[in-house]
Length: 254
Image 1 (cartoon, helix red, strand yellow):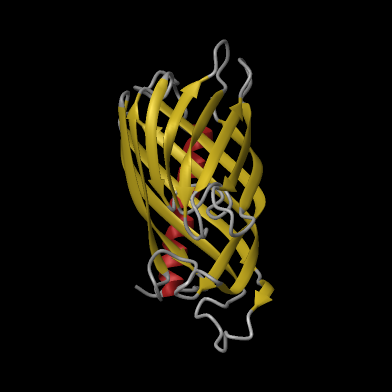
Image 2 (cartoon, helix red, strand yellow):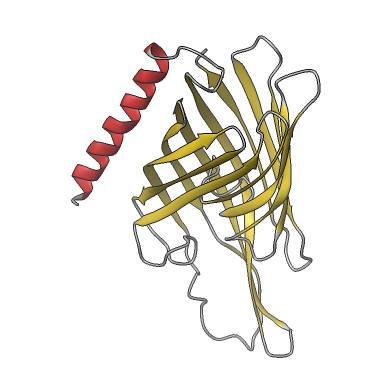
């Protein structure tokens, strides 16, 4: 498929989702329709460290990230339709190079990219699963799951009742992609008592050098159509300072 055709069809798909969210919303009971849009941005940093056979650090590079994205989801009965787009920029700062290290690492890249994608899924009260494809304008094999491919997968699995306790895991599905805990995550989510607000705690990884602890909160007072996204993650290792923070808005068309 040609790039122009892909972007054209993806834009049409997202436009259809958005239009349906505005004029087609009928109910919030799970058997009708509901639609929401997430707009989230953040900053973070991951680390790449090269060591010798004895564990001595030969090179230490940090990669600050700026990241922003939008996701629209439309539920119709048990069906879920997803549209995503966003952009991020990764730079490199080198804090240490040993005189024993002579070569540049293969992931020694600073670059920016934009992406667009779509997916579909099934949404039951106690189970949700979806999957889709993202297309990236620019690629770097060091920072994306599939090397040297503009096309990257995304997926998410939920087990449990979203209005109570549930387990979820996702791959390249967060908004924004990079700073909201990593390329993949798993953890537990739950509703906060007395409101529509919720929280999620878990672990993630990639492209981070070490695993990440992740905390996310959605503040959604009763009666509000809007909700506030807040998330933070930090590295569990001691070799580098790795973190991500993001904030954004969800708007429910109800």
